[in-house]
Length: 78
Image 1 (cartoon, rainbow, N blue to C red):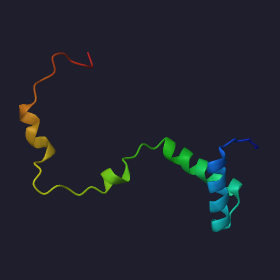
Image 2: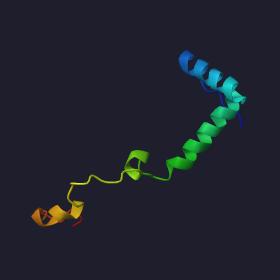
Image 3: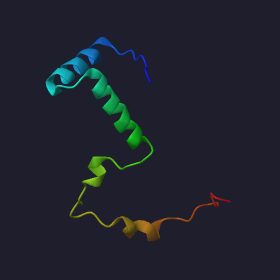
Image 4: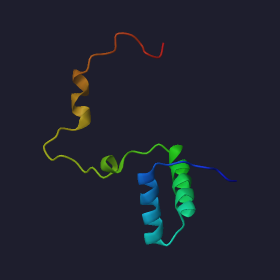
């Protein structure tokens, strides 16, 4: 299947530069980028910063404040 895609000059030049550096064609890079985007699109994922987060040493556990929460005024699912 063929598509025409129009991009700005700056992006086009960056794409050309990366294609030359990688030894791949611009079409191959675009094809791979679209495939990667489509594969991720339907798989919600936490950002790497969240996944890689370890902890803060003196921070209380998230659940520690649960007893202080007020109940909702109304059932949001009712």
